[in-house]
Length: 201
Image (cartoon, rainbow, N blue to C red; front, top):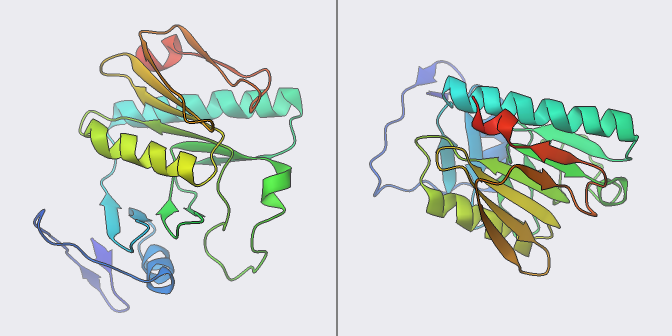
């Protein structure tokens, strides 16, 4: 459902149809359609993400809760965001990771203009959580894009197959089968994600 100024407008597109929007138009669309999770590719393609099922929602809540507990207890300077937070990446894409963290140093470099709807900064850390309906390859492409734009550490969690892909700034990608936990490494010092909390939903 896309909201116009006067009334809601149903929007159905075939896979062959692509919509392209400017950053300004995208910001307006996102403001008018807060119930939708919208993203924009680097070339301006509008991406409409459907609502997740209850399992993905619960996993995402757990993940963000564990990150918040770490942030609060560790006193780590920085800013946490959940899946509704949008970032304008250096390549012009607008992305909303399922969870993300931005260091104070990076946060200070963003455009401070309060009229800017999205933070003009690339997070230091991102997580994408695959839902049952998600194809893997677009998520992998998104992780590569995050890394190319400055993400230091990224996790792609695939609960259906109990797999994890870890993306690092140096270009390394580790693919793990049924790991028990993940370390935040130097990016999130002291943070450890027990994956039983994610797999068991």
